[in-house]
Length: 55
Image (cartoon, rainbow, N blue to C red; front, side):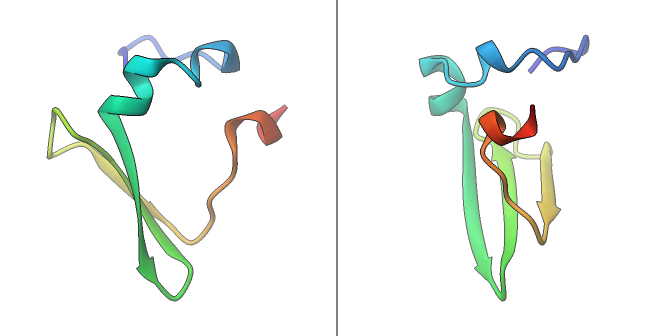
């Protein structure tokens, strides 16, 4: 993920991002999305959406 974030969803399905980022369902409909290369980079949410649904 770059420091210059955009809303371009065409990059969302690349093989690199699929390998680098992972999702965990930690119960009670709570999710953690994390960076496999930087274990300090993660976000927790009670909602998970497919990137294609954002437009």
